[in-house]
Each structure stands twice: as C-alpha cells, then as structure tokens.
Image (cartoon, rainbow, N blue to C red; front, side, top):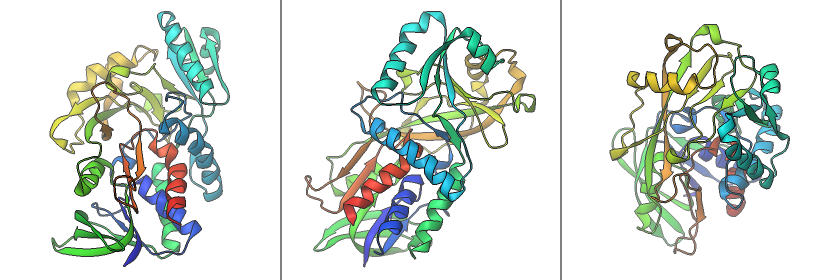
Length: 368
C-alpha cells in the first residue's frame, strides 16, 4: 500500500512529487501512460514563464501564476535550470489602445510588478524588427527549459525513493476502507491493483475521465490544439523579448505570439482550434501557413512566407463551458463530494508550467 498515488508525470504531477519529497518521507507511486515523464502537454508549449497579467484577479490562474512565477525563478537559480528573464512586449495598434490599457489595469490588479505602456519610439529601440503603435512592457515574463525543469523535479522525487510506473494507465478506481483501490493496466496489458490513502489526479488530457471514474459531478474537458511554426535561421538572435499580440478571447488563447528557446531559434504560435473526439493528433498542418504568415506580418517587419516552416503542436485540456472560452483551473480536494483523500486537478493549461511549483506545494500541504 502506498501513502499517495499521483496519476500523471507531467510538470504538475512531478511538482507534487517534488514537494512531497521535500516535506515528507511518505511512500509515493507515480503512474504515467507514456514511456517516460514529461512526454505530454508539459513538453508541447511555448515554455514561457508568465507574469499573471491576463487572468481574472479572483481566479486560481491569477493566484498560482503570480505566486508560482517567483517560486519558479528561485528554483531555476537554485537547481541550475536554464531560463531567461527576457521580458515581453504585448503589442497593439492605435485602435486597440483601450484593450491594451485594460490589460495593463488587470496586471496591476494582480500585483504584477514592472509593467508599463511604451510607445512606438521606445518599441523601436527595444525591438527594431517589430512594428507597433504601442506595447505593454512586462519585465517579469521569461522563458524556461521545461525539460530541465521536469528533470529537476524528477531527480528530487527520486531522491526520496518514489516509485514510477511508466507505460501504464489507470482504468478503474474504487473507494476502500482506508483510501482507494486503483486498477492499473501495465505495459504488458495486464491489470494490477494498487491500494493507497491518497489519489492525486494530475493526468492532463485524461484528468476529467479519471475524475469521472468516481462519479459524474466533475468538469469535462475539450481539446484545443495549437500548432507552432518556426522562423528561418536568419531570424535567430533577432529579438530580445517575447512578442505577443493582444489575446484572442474568441478562441481562449493568447494569440499567435513570438518566442524563442535556449538556441535563440524563433517560433510563432500557437494557433488554436477545437478538436472533436479527444484525438491526440500532433501533426502540424501545412495549410496553416497563410494564417501564421498573416498573423506574424502584422507585427514582424520584413517577414516573408518562405521564412516559415511547420514545427510542432500541442493540445490544451480546456474545461468546456459555452459561455467562457478562458475558463479557470479546477483544483479540488473532493471531500465535500464524498471522496476524502482524492484531489482532482482538471483543466491545467497555461499558465500551468509557471504555476507548477505553487500548485505542487499547496497539494502536498494537504497530504502531509
């Protein structure tokens, strides 16, 4: 019997395991359907350390993003995880002034430090290749190696002799006298059972399905696929900041933005469109070229269509509500629903990477 079973070895599951390793010697089993950790949505994103400017001040996203941002920077320095606090510009045209000012005010309401609106002259000094009338300069935004971060979490977890079961998935769950019994299909297709006191459901794209093994009164997810295109090598080292348009609220995304990685390779993305049938399709459609070019040339001077080529894709697990395309996280210890010792984390999309340490600490504190 284990004290805690964590379902999912993405950045959230690993961060919870890390927090438990740092605070307790209790036994932990992490179950992951892929062949190793961090192979799902945690490794298919923009790798941005978000500031917290976008989210409703009363939301879990705002709480965990702003708290997690500073924890993440501190952790990266301590554990030698590659990161770059490069800052970002959210750019706009003259007709978008009210929209950008509202974003600025929301950032202030969330306590985001070092944000200010700059005009064309300052933009040109900071980013000569960017065309915009004004921008919101957000200094505390950065980029990170998600793989190095997850490797650090995994290393700390392993230092406490946590067990990991890869190429395995939970196919059933039942309450028991002292906790829960989970049915697990292992890599050989055999069904094993594991008993535990606590279940932490951090299974990403399948988190709603895992929760609904215990009943129907839990959120459902809808998949939002986002593709990325990379820019030709001539654009390497061309930008000092991440560049964002104003959010695409209709699709519940931050828009097709410009980011770069440790090698200074530049990419645009993600796009956003709903996927029916819960299909994990990571193919990047070449038919999106025109969309990426048209979006990118709005703010990138000298961008040509042949500078773009398909890169990779990711899928966001969005809690589906018809009236809210930008829903909040669902993080709940389900005691009130009759499941003490069961914690669901559903719809952990952006800014989940930024929020991971803060979320991990809070979940672990409920267990110890």
